[in-house]
Every structure is written in C-alpha cells, then in structure tokens.
Amino acid sequence: MQIKLDYHEVIGQLNDAERVLEALTLPSPSKEELGQNQLAFTKNWLEREEKIKQMLQAYIIAVQKNIEDTRANVAILKKQDEAIVK
Image 1 (cartoon, one colour):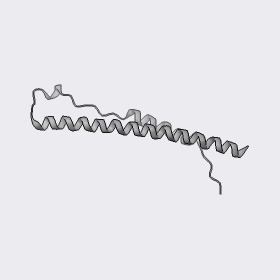
Image 2: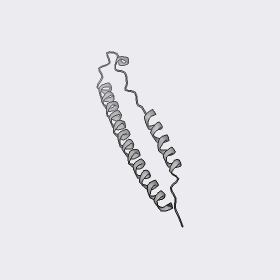
Image 3: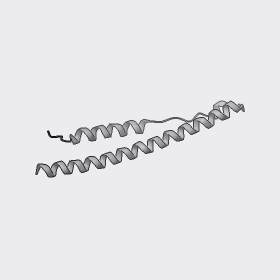
Image 4: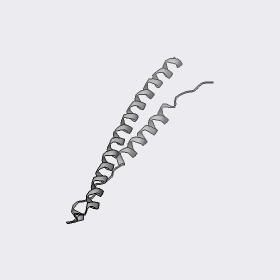
C-alpha cells in the first residue's frame, strides 16, 4: 500500500483556510453609540467584548502559525515524494 501526497490539493486547502482566517473579524462595540450610559453592566459588557476580541486575535495567530507549520511540513513531504520517485 502506498500513500502519496496530493500537494496541490493540500496547498489549495491551506490557501482556503488562510482566506477564511483573513476574513474573520469581530468589530468592537462603539462606545459612542452607548452615549452617556454609565451602568456597571455596560462597563462589564465592554470589558467582556474586549476580552473576546483579544481571544479571537490569539486564536487567529495560533491558526496562522499552524497553517505555516503545515505548509512547511507539506513542502518536506513533497521533496521526500520526489526523491522516492527518482
């Protein structure tokens, strides 16, 4: 049994993942839209929204690193496949 890497398929999937990741955004709530609202709930809500945005940014960075690592590993596998064929 032989397992062969479909390099173009894998790279295409990685490119798709990068495009989706780049489109992933979470707009911050507008403090101006809240007006003079000084409720404790509003303050807590804004803090929670900021933490969620920070977590999303950390997630994006982690996924970008994962994509880069996968791309590098795929390149190594491609070279190995080419060496075996020769």
